Amino acid sequence: MSPNLPRLLSVLRHEGRPGPVPFIELFADQPIMEAVLGHPMPPADATDRQARRAYGDSLIEFYSKLGYDYVPIGVGAGFQRATAETVDTACLSRGTRHWDNSTTGLIKSWADFEAYPWPKPEAIDYSWPAYMLSRLPEGMGAMAMGAGGILEWVMWLMSYEHFALALYDQPDLVEAMFTKVTEILVTVCRDLLDMGGFCGYFIGDDMGHVNGTMISPALMRRYVFPNQRKLADVAHAHGVPFLLHACGNLSEVMEDLINEVQIDAKHSFEDKIEPVESLHARYGKRIALLGGVDVDLLARGSEAQVRARTRQLLDALGDSGTWCLGTGNSVANYIPVSNYLAMLDEGRRWNREHYG
Image 1 (cartoon, rainbow, N blue to C red):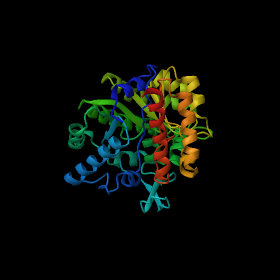
Image 2: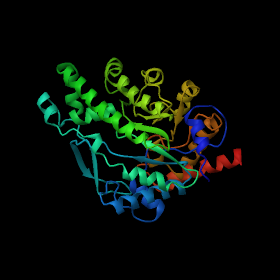
Image 3: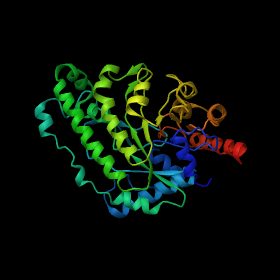
């Protein structure tokens, strides 16, 4: 498949014109990329210039080889946080798996807030994004990737447990956390997009669980959505669509995301919450819906089951012009590579059958 960036942009701008279905992901775990490419990659956080560039070259190779129309390019904001770890038992193990520590945060008081080493966006090195933009294959776009989500970083820095308590015990501290985190992320967003050459801005900000939002919709409207809107405004001021990856049951706040935050596209879907077809029926004329092949199916299903579900989604949504094919979350290292590749292969077959 040759890159078709105009087609991807048409979908992300929810223009509703039928055409080949683009592929999209928030990210693929590095062991997945290495398995597909057949060679190791330097670590994503390599500090050596040559290693960092070699990682970038492999990233371009991966997305180009599999038929994506873009390469994800971003920088970290530099936040430090507490994490927990255990042995990674995935089929493509990284050795150690890290996750958020929901009880031990670095900021629990005003003293912690003042002592925390807040990142300085002006110190971020943008030489790697510049290198990546200069290396894009002809016809491929660059997707600017966010440096984490606003709600996520506040919860990660405080820990979910203390954040929940502070909403009632220390609302002034919570307000200051959202203000500070937003200020940093908006600056990073603006500085990255100022480089030019990007086709969209894609952030991850998980806001829910199976039954609802992480905090009440009222608190989301007070603290989260006005600050996410600031990121969307920066993206739109640069002429690019604003893509939101957000896990969880967000049914109570979808109208807020569309009308107040002004997202252009929503990513992350889980069948046991609500299949993407159902969400597309309600929102597919107002925003683009991205992905939706359930990660549980990809992780535990057979190749035949993955192909059948992928074909079902393609037949239901493929001609809408407001949907991209991809996983319901990300290409995690516990997904068999054969199932991931089967999903994409089914997409290529469907596109050939319908659009030549």
